[in-house]
Amino acid sequence: MSIFKVIVLAIVQGFAELLPISSSAHVVVAEKLMGLDPSSPQMTLLLVMLHTGTMFAVIAYFWKTWKAAYFSSGQAFKQFAVLVIWATLLTAIVGETIKIIIEKTLFRGAAKAEIEQLFSHLEMIAPALAAAGLLILIAGLAERRQMKNSTRGIGLGRMPEHSEGLVTASQAGWMGILQGLALPFRGFSRSGSTISIGMLAGAAKQAAERFSFAMAVVLTPPVVAIELARLLKAAHAAAAAGTPIDLHAALFSSLLGMVFSFFAGLIALKWLSSCLETGRWYLFGIYCVLASMVVFYLHGRGF
Image (cartoon, rainbow, N blue to C red; front, top):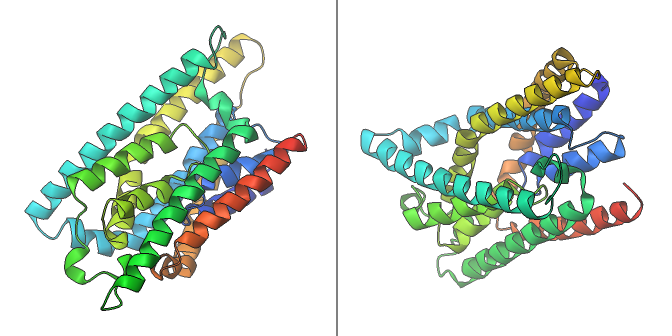
């Protein structure tokens, strides 16, 4: 794969990740348009590394906010650690259960059944985008309704300082479950679904957004490790078949993409973060629904 294509994918990832519109779906569609196979081990590793670059951008951008919220005291950190472990445990249970069910049903009898084989199927991405869009739309409209009903003109996006702390155990649990649903399905925005369900469960949007990104940072290292192991396994099988995979090229492309997605993510955060706090969350839901229609169209055209 050319460096130009890696850079394009990194920029798409960097900008789309900071909006609740499913960066994975956008990257997969871009890969398809450029004639790449999103389900190959090289491409799934690249996608995970692009997420890693964006997550480093999120850490750099939100570190002061997280420090004030989660590391202000030993008690605050303990509460955060318990919540993030609880949410991540639910993510693992839900995500792994769905993965097993899909591999044992859709791929029944196949010699090599991996859920990553679905990543190149636009007919699967489109409904996932639509589902995420509807969830975001519901949460966004509920937020606007609350803002209008607030006698002080304060909505979920601009809550008083005392209500912007940690999410509750129930809210964290729901966010962990939705994150688990997002893992197997490209198009079901992880940030969009987790923030939306947090809002619908009663969390202030700033608290839900902050915890959503914190969950993603915790989840990224094991996902990268899994994809590295998958790539090494595929490389061994390819070498045995006489069609070796260039691991050095795959790792170089992934690291290069990570760097570009990091800088793209920083630019996107500075440009777009204010849009997430102005009561216009529902617009992202509309975008996802429209994007799902475009993906269905591309599928119909043979991509």
